[in-house]
Length: 317
Length: 317
Image 1 (tube, rainbow over the protein chains, first blue to last red):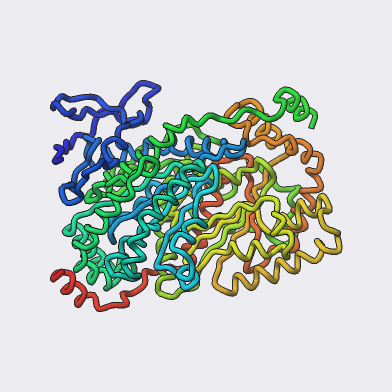
Image 2: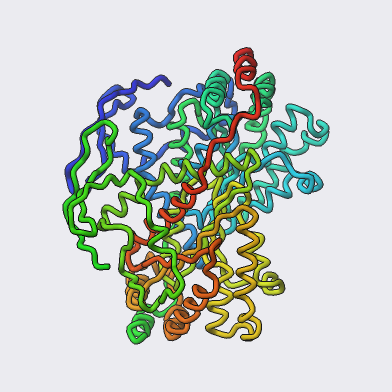
């Protein structure tokens, strides 16, 4: 995409309503300067990032910033500006569940090592821990291996009112498992259909599913692994196996492409997030979830008690 | 405590190191103006808030702000300023566990309805969800009731490297249970000793335990319940039973006093947090956890691989 990154810091709005917000003039698609208030909803990330039939991972630029014309500072600011709305919508989602709503939301995060999954957790999901149900799926335990591959996934699904987050997921069972033939092909090849049926059932029970692939380039991964070897505070994240896995990069990309092709459905679409720029990937994932939450038209539940009578009782207490 | 709240906004530091930080002159205990940089560690909350033998809840002022001389704006700023250090220390705690450390931390949050437990979750605990294990304990399910009262608590303990948070806890089993005699007295009266033995074992396994009681006044609770009846976005938090429970306020305070007396131990001390001012309570709980984390002297683990050899392998990959 190669958007120009302007370096000016924008002008502080001095009106009362805009206090603390920063408006900025950024070029639109025609190159005209347009003032943008990053505290206002951005919108449009879902349309930009949801993949369509014929999508090709190989032709997708991991350093692009679709749907956002600002630079890194703007992106960080937009991320921070959306936190209050995000928190408010998650509270509404939870509140609805106390009145019987079955609505929930599930974010599935996949990506190669160093693609920024942890950053999504720290910078996007670190909100309302009461309403968030985040699960990191590691290599399956013996108990998990003794069950069907969806057994541990089922147990981690969000309850009504919750924001569920999967850091890796059942897709590992058609990614690393496929690349390394950890189970026979006649087994893993049946899993795409099983995943679609599973996700259809989950969506049917009231859970909005958003799947994101954090897509980095092989060169960017090299730089990020290099950083882990250069900085003692990053050593603990480094695993010599990560370098071995780089030999299989093309096989992984092929496995991702197949998963995207076979498992992007109307009720559980895949989105590919260009992730070479961490700030953009974080903003994009946040905005995808926000757009889904807005689309749910979440209202505060009505009182299930007599408000005036309770006021009188409270006054006497 | 009745500290004076100055209204001036402080002066922005213009040095590079202080960029974005606000220094402020506030009066010290002798009334002299002292410049404070809220981005620097505050310290001292543990000493101020950990209860000592003879502590009396009835004599404690829920509107005081021990250990902090600033006002609401200062408090919010200090809370925000500490987030990076908090996040860094939690990452170190986690990193240590990947190298075999058994260290973990557990924050137990108790308090009357509306005392601000939810605010602690949203404003203090909403950090690094990968390393946080937060559990809200509701009225026990039938399955939980069929077990010893500590059964569900045991299952929710943090693993090595985690920051565990209990929103309510096993103390409900000597609070609401005692006030309403939900089990016979000969049963609940044995629980204090069981709790102490349990917490001693947990601390012995490497978990630092911090217990906080969010202490509000009965009048402040009335105002907060009133707000839930005045605002449609708060109706869902209101429960008519909350007003009924106000009749038992004194019995609850007595039950809290006994729990504080019997279960404040060297390895699992109780802290009483004046909670009539939400901003102070949040800051105080954050700082208690921070002070504990600092005391753990968490170092990044050494590389368990040959760094130079890995750099060479990565370069070739």
